[in-house]
Length: 324
Ligand SMILES: Nc1ncnc2c1ncn2[C@@H]1O[C@H](COP(=O)(O)OP(=O)(O)OP(=O)(O)O)[C@@H](O)[C@H]1O
Ligand SMILES: [Mg+2]
Image (cartoon, rainbow, N blue to C red; front, side, top):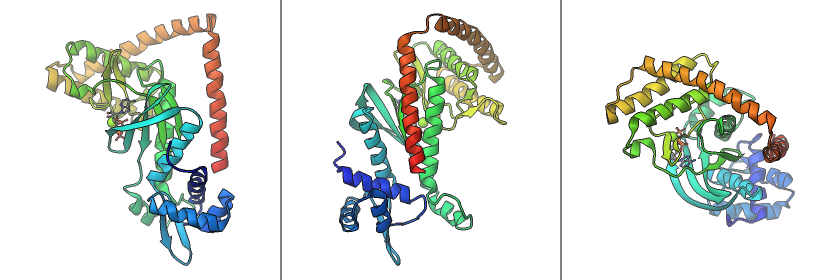
C-alpha cells in the first residue's frame, strides 16, 4: 500500500532508532540495527534519499536521518500491519500543528499526524548543544508526546464525552473515527441555543472526568447528526492543573464569543460556568446509575473489547520498550 518494501521500512525504522543516539546515523549503525548487510544498506539508503525519505549529511562519515515524511510512513505501516487501516485517502485538515487524512478501516477513519516541534527545531538544537543528555531529535519526541497525550485523553473521554472514537496510535500519529460534518464555524445552526447548551454539556462531561480541553473554539467542534463533537485534545489539561480555572474560562469565553457574534446569544461567563457546574453534577448522578447498571449486567462483549485493548496496549508497550 505504501510503495515501500519491507527492507526499506526496516531501514527507516533503524534510522529512527539510531536517531536516539546520533544526530546523523552512520550507515554501519543502520546496518547493525536492521540486520542487513552494509553494501545493501548503502544502496537502499541511496534510493530512499532519491525518494526524499531520508536526509543525509557528509561529515567524516556519511550520516542519515529521517524527517516527518518517513516518520509518517513508519506510523502508517504500523497501522496497516495491525489491521487498523486498509486504505489511505485525501488530506482533510491542516492545523497549526497537525495534518489530518481520511482513511478506511472499521468504517471511515481519520488519521492525524502531529507536527509539533519541527519549526523550532533549529532553535532547540542551538539550545540543546549546551544541554547534555537531552534527546537529539526533539521534534520526534514532542510530536510523539502530543499524539500520546491526545490519544490517552480521548480514551479517557470516550464515550462519555462526544469525541471521535479513538482507534490506534503509533509514534506521532493517531487513528480515530471520522466525524462527518462541518465545523461549527462553517454552518448556520437552526437551533443555536440548543447547540450551545449541548456544547456546555460536553464541557461539563469532560470536566466530570477531570479533563479541560484548553483549546476549545468553533474550529474544534464538528457538528454531525448526533450533535456537537469535540476534537483536537493534545493540549488538554487535568482539572487539578494550576491554571485549570483560567483555561476553562478561556474555553467557555471562546464559545460564548462565537455564539454572541454569530447568533446574538448573550450569556455571561458566570452563567456558563454555573451551567457547567450544574451539568457536571447532574451527569455525576447519571453516570453513577449507568455504572450501577454496567456492573449488574456487565456485557461480555464489552469485557472482550477491554481485553483486546489491553492486549494491544501490552504489545505497544513491548514495542516502545524495544525502541527505547
Ligand atoms: N476525527 C475527525 N473527523 C473529521 N475531521 C477531522 C477529525 N479530526 C480532525 N479533523 C479535521 O482536521 C482539522 C485539524 O485537526 P485538529 O483540529 O485535530 O488539529 P490542529 O488544529 O492541527 O491542532 P492544533 O490545534 O494543535 O493546531 C480539523 O479542523 C478538522 O477539519
Ligand atoms: Mg484544530
